[in-house]
Image 1 (cartoon, rainbow, N blue to C red):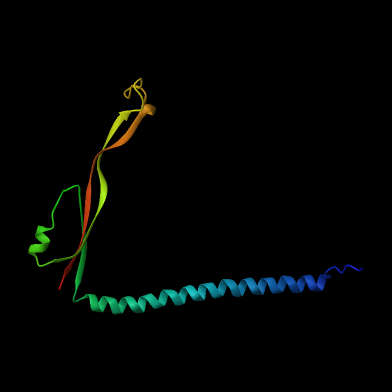
Image 2 (cartoon, rainbow, N blue to C red):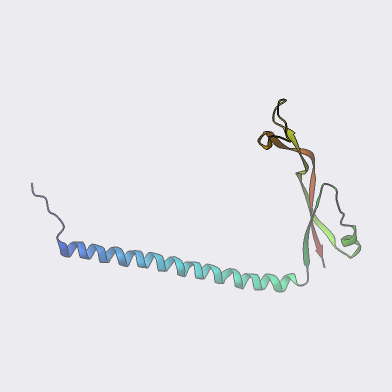
Length: 126
């Protein structure tokens, strides 16, 4: 049984092959990225021209502060509405009964105080 080792010309060929392969791989990814970036730009131009007739706006109202009445009076129409739970305020409490929050800042724990609702409105104006 004979074992053949790569001779130095074969090693050089392998190095060149690896270099060319990596170069092609890296440049093809950058070309692909450039193609992907150009496609959305063309699509966005079409969307923008169509969206000039319809204006869209998303408004969020947290913990019952604010309203959309002024937008509705200006002619905006509610297309979609969804809500999420949100923490409205926080409070600091001691970690245990022996803890003095004024002397030891490490024993202070911040907990949610009031939990409310954040409402998101998707408005559209024609």
